[in-house]
Image (cartoon, rainbow, N blue to C red):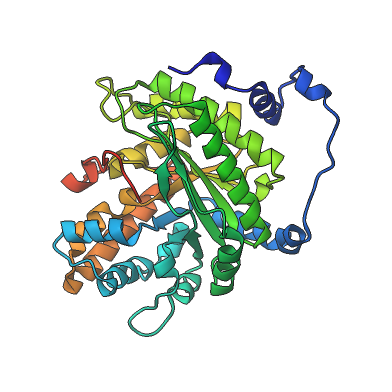
Length: 390
């Protein structure tokens, strides 16, 4: 499906040298460029490194709760709760005030509205997270738009990102996320892959200068009938391009996190793969494309069931990895929590207990020590949504 000439030699050369393999090509004969580090990056270098290091402690991952008002609202409405700001605030307060959440959650990604909200007792969400040892983060992309002359999309939000990142830092955010996507059924075209990779790199450079650790999220969408081998081929191309542009933009790998999708079959593929097969393909991809200096690999669940997302992560941690291989889950942590609460504060304690358990189970999977027990129907059901939009 992918034209063989679409993977640039520069991208392949860059990615291979990251893994320590010796590569001889014309690209290596180019004159060396001086590394450019801005004063702003130097100003925040120590803090960025500290943030990335503390967020990737053993047994810890990230709670993604950065759904847009529309997406959060549709989920609330799905359990009979009206989509108004107060209900979104109530639900998210339930999440961040879960007792002992910080034992297995190192960071929480917030939507812009949520970053400025407070608990019912007046405690800001930022302070509530910090009290648990959880770093507040923020989604900074402005969503997907149609990419001209293709059936694909591009991600917007770079124009005013420097100013917004400075304001988010002032509010207390210490990391952020930018999601761009590549669709296998809709392409993928060289134009879309290049835009995805370059946009992620520009974003990462801008926010590091503002003091925020970037989460780089090149998501290969689950939509489609393609098998695991085709996913591997597309992901190989996308990740090579992404790290090529990250290097070109002088992004510090030690001060960034990668949030990829796992390498598996499309949602409509008739052939399903085991957790061990998904882990094998994904780890081969990581080892061939991701620099060992990268602070952490925080997988998205991308529509997997709560149980499968934990099993796949556990399988990837059965042997040592050069990076912190962990999770940055939204639906795979929240699905049963939301259904249990359903707007009834009398169910708050029960819902929080489920979130604490799901965080612990994924923390165990990060250590390769998860053992599946009895699970509810909602934990086994797929959270996949076709053409999913945040």
